Image 1 (tube, rainbow, N blue to C red):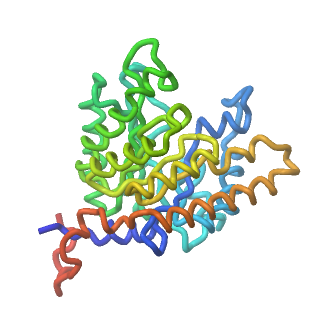
Image 2 (spheres, rainbow, N blue to C red; image 1 turned 90 degrees about the horizontal axis):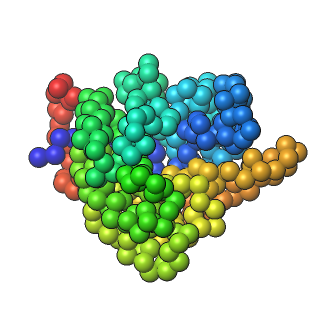
Length: 331
């Protein structure tokens, strides 16, 4: 008998469209946003400027998303307090610190100091997001898996959904993630990662595209790889954008959703262009980004698989017995 977790179900409803598809705006960027703001000296960017840009993007694009993903340091609390995050839009909050620690061939993830699942729940977040640097054959695979299991248990305790974002990397010295060698192995790595991590109790897999779309041009291969990812994942999955050009990301969303994805969580592919124009043109670029988000959302809603058709909670009876509230979440 599935243990009903009403908070998780409600959080998934709050972060998805009326069709049950995730059309989420990602704006939890930290180091990458600093590089956009000041490429020559990212470390000089003050916190106030980071928050100002996040508020500007969220206030314009947020109304067209099913939810917005924000970080605790510069975005989540600030966008709620300012009113820039609309009340009808769901909120995901990141748990991980930006970047990685340790060996580049065995990248470790760490949680934001002073932040927690409990605080995210308390502030009214609809869901939490955890990014982990992960490769199935990395020497620290066990440690990264243990971190996922730790956060899964916290989210279960506080009855809040967990979106897991595994980010792959090369485990071979001298071979970068952008290389032809890694591209040839990407499908295996992404799908094996989904197979290993999606069944640990996470609620949604925020997945990388399982092939390199800039090297592999055959969309039939795209579909086959995405379908294989759907089969490997124990939970609904949503596509991350990974800073590819918008036109490419739009095609990726269509193929992924046709192959079983439950939507997308998109960031730089949607809004990065606003940092490539002079300040007087930023409002126009923001409107263009909003149009992109609206188009992606319509495509995902049309072609995506509703999350409730894939989530384990919804595969049994949805009837809740009278008196459920007496013992609800007592353990």
